[in-house]
Length: 293
Image 1 (cartoon, helix red, strand yellow):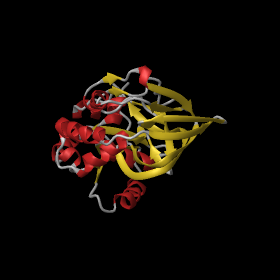
Image 2: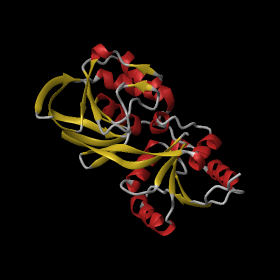
Image 3: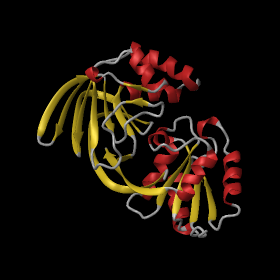
Image 4: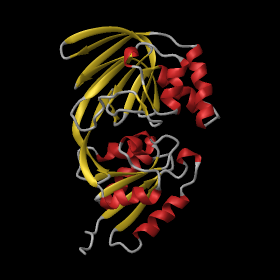
């Protein structure tokens, strides 16, 4: 049997993502690789100067693979540092939201995820540049972004926490009048939310974008015209495909969106405030991602 080629692996660990400490993950990583020829390094996020310190660590370690151990926020932060490089992004799902891992069929089981880090294949995935932010997964304006804002501000987690803020959002729901420009055409719509989707589904498994493909050089603008509490809860709490009669999907490589008032805005689960304009452009094949064989 051929010996595996030695690699340098940098694990970027969010110690308290998902509200849980990751000491067990570190121990499992060390145990998995203890008899393998790879060099293992760790970088622990502290929430203070991570954006500045992580690139310095990457430059010093010079890893072949950089593995995010955490939720979607950790994955997004690491991925931004790897765009347009030869380094591959690996994921160990360990957050309260693991949407990107779910999209890529990466299991929550640590040993199974580590097997993908060691033996997985590499594909070049797209990203979207949205208002100078990098989106790997899903971004949106409107109701869902407001829900994320309320959830971040609240002290209740889990499905009950989502249900509570979903009700609060629906009691205050307002239509958004949007003007979109794409492919030389202008489109005017009234909607409750507009999703810019690189992927197909939220972390719960709710399919928001049936056409989602991370490798096709396109993204989708998903216009949700109708949205009741049942639909919103299904988006967040269980796998479900939204009613195609209530949504409109437009494929694009570039889009400009203007709204008649400031609306809530989020990228990959991170609330970024209110905006009146969204500019989005595809970044095709700029991120190497480790996937199951």
